[in-house]
Amino acid sequence: MTAVVPVHRAAVHEAAAHEVAAHATAAYGLPVRGLAVYDGSGVSGGLYSRVVGWADAAPHWLDRLVALWSLLGLGLFALLMLAAWWRARDGGPAVMARVLASAPVVLIAYVVNSGFKGVVEEVRPCAQLRVRDTLESCPGPGDWSFPSNHTVIAFAAAAALFLVDRRIGAVAAAAAVLMGASRVWVGVHYPHDVLVGAVVGVLVAVPLVLAAGRAGPLVAHARTGPLRPLLGAGAAAAVVGAGRPVGARRD
Image (tube, rainbow, N blue to C red; front, side, top):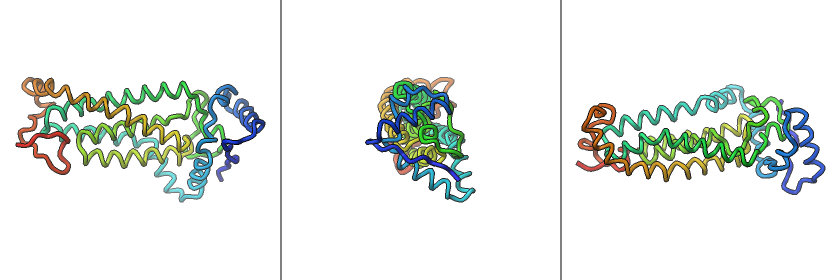
């Protein structure tokens, strides 16, 4: 069974906080300074403990499914980007420009989020709260928790895809929510890590993808050359409607 130490509340006594810091230092090699900078258990530790308890009581097959999704699910977003690229071949040049920018934008979101992690240095909840037997191994020292990288990547990809193709974007958004939830279920993130990660992913992706649409004239020119097989014929056959690329022009 999973063992969870009672969560520290916002009004936790200083002595209790020092006791947890000392344990983490001894067991995980974590500096007390890092715990003093940011102990996320006072933000959403109670909800984290509840979710981990649900995971502990859940059927084995469900836990395995969630753990597998948490580990490999980001690959789905790459496949959705390929699907969006294929559909955008019949879309306007601005749509194709946004598709081509999607992967670099997700990478930028990841880099921005990594910067946040280094500034906040929030200890993983499985280390802070001494949770044993989480579905995913508790990351080691220096692998900070806030915000969740998986969630940032998933929501950045979903936001980018929604600005390209609303139907594919809706599928990606649902997958992003499941990805974020899975990171708490497997025990490696607090709920607030996931929530802030979603916000970071969207805030980084939306303006960059919209700005990428301004490169439409470059795509239109490239479609007249040797890149035409890659970029498609354009919007000549595209019709605005459900599931069509956002911004596709009418005949």
